[in-house]
Length: 250
Image (cartoon, rainbow, N blue to C red; front, side, top):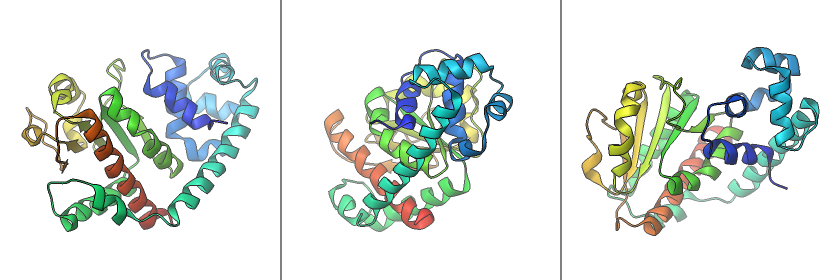
């Protein structure tokens, strides 16, 4: 059976409207590790939701009450953590690094990965931005980091109330860089430059695009090809979550 958090992420990542379903899903992602401490009244009060809205959200996921929804959510939390631990015991980021085509040297790359792990540990929210395909590849990374207590969300243009904060980490994933041209100007208006920007790309010319200067750049080599770049994305995100687990969760 699919985990509740995975179903919520599937909905949120493809969401098109800022409504109570979207806001409740984001609230759960943000407060995932504390859900066991929240009663229905606490949930409504803290998130500014009505009881009808919360029950509607639970009903869309197949649960008739908030308590049964929360009970399954807590069971899923432990199951996911057990899955992560069993996968990570024998995980070796060196194996993934050997398959990764990067512009920097391996020591330089791992130094950056360690710095990013420190940055993630010290801050609470990661925002993923990019095309449908690359952001879709980030879902497993997203689920693991949420399980570790981090808020990890996709950026959505329709959310007019969204603002970047100085303790946000923005993971901008784009092979050719075209997404920078399409999205960066609007994101700058939402205070993008206050956040830490991590650019994962094959196209080095977008490092200093417009007013967006990436704080960290992961330059992977290869053709401007979605298949090739897809493997690169998975390798980078796998190394990042393995290293984070080893440094801060194990």
